[in-house]
Image (spheres, one colour):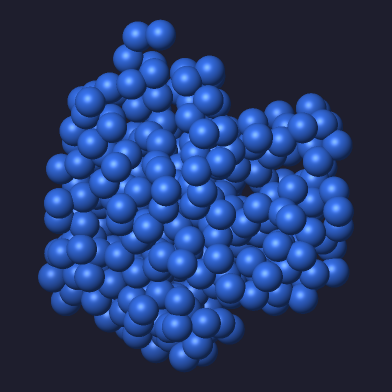
Length: 351
């Protein structure tokens, strides 16, 4: 079966990630979506999934346009209130799928409470821990059965690889995922495994600095006259701030999203094309600061009506804070607001 079955570099990475997350085993895949796909392969026709309503766009596309055709029904609910999960769950539910915090509106779900609800019908709780990282949050300790990571993001940390990771809680689940990994073949190559291991060596240092920068940026945005809403779990105004504080060990992540008072895609486009430190790109979690416009980028595959229902407004902008000086990042955002405001008055738009 070649290196698809086993590779020493991949084994080192998988063992390290399993240890970081407190799981039985971990499995490295070529992409985050390959990791998600491997977990979905545990299901059979007729099974049902309860998924967070503002799920990552790639996962939504996979769930809706691939697996629903194969007889898997998906219910999208606001999991920030565990009662919403309890109201939908049934004996047919086999997976409860949450991201906490979510991408891009930073919604936080109570993992412990949702775990209890999932266990009441013997469903597995899957937590995408990409945004919190193993530094802030340990979903298995909170009751999760499976953890998903886009290794491309914080774990890799340098925007130079694409990877997906699955962590399993039990030996039984580990054996099932190992079979799927070998049978479907979407493994991570040795060089990318090496790069991911390299990233893990500085993960805590990077993540803590990114959290500090995000906190400073969120505070700046919360007081800016052009900003309508700021989405960041570290703000006391966040709906589930207390839950985030408890289950993320006081670390709120390096992502900040916000909407403009001029809630249009055009206004967002002007802003994201006028920053200097923040580079326009879909990825996140790296040492360099990035920004993106989810309605036209990461969540473009989600119909506008559904996107709006899940809180992703037309002007929503997502910032991924890197490890630069926080003052430089704030100054960059400030000058972008100033530039955009000038274009309104003069009609000139930077190209």
